[in-house]
Image 1 (cartoon, rainbow, N blue to C red):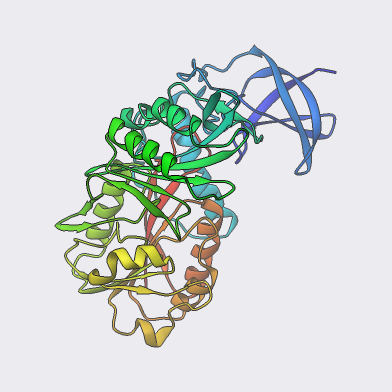
Image 2 (cartoon, helix red, strand yellow):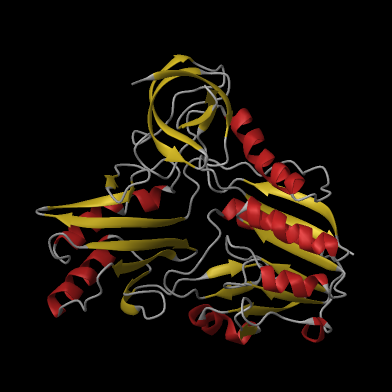
Length: 408
């Protein structure tokens, strides 16, 4: 039975939040100040998840979403929100998370605002169904695939790859089989890794078809398998990433910052905040995007074997910082630390940093919750959160990047 709800705010998962009869309701695709009609579905996180039926009184901040797949695709939940209000909400997620942890935060720097057609990395999912192949992203909260025509957040060359991918994998995947396709736009062209969900070795005929696909799509490199054991199918140009005056050949499926604008902003922050540093430890370094080619000398610490192999000659060390964090004696030879951990944050490593005498720490984060937890640990260890820059490289999603400077 539909109910009428007044939306009070947008929660951290991007859904509008309403209260009625002592219960909280979570309604996707709604905005603060709106009156909506919704159908309650099931309990969720201390409230009730509901499906939007109709917006009865729209917000002045509502605008027409630009994507034909809006409302179905799970990638973008907030395309209906006017940019200024959306950006303010997104940066507010960081401030609220820090406040809940009792972290004294500075005034944030003006955010780096994302733009359509900017994403240089995509994780597509493809599934063969009879004589067609679906290609795109998962539906919202569902294993079903949205067959994407154009994704408005991706760079044009990534969108142009979808149709050739459908044709190529139609001839290679067994009926009903699926694969993830990781695409990185490098400085020398697209680097593509096809990762079948149920691994199998492609036949000679399949390899020939994949090579032909690599030529038709003008790929720099095409690989098959998973990140740890990727088999090269065709290398037409060696993929390269330039960081200042340093060039790196990334492994297939390598992690990149989602947009070049975000990477440039983060590198600029590191350069400015660590001015005068001579030796820097780069923790969870990936392929060194934040510290290679800077004015200081960096040592990269990373657990991924392929990333370490790609940067071994540039000062990379393989180390699992979750199980074996750098301790005080390891940090004695460094002037500063840069870390960019995954969404879970860096509990063990931050605990050691909080006990160290490193004067400056730059922390890049893609999760406000784990960042605020680690920020509190650093604060308790005697660090002050001095600078904080929000970065919206995950456009229209609920995820927000930030980079911050902590100083003793």
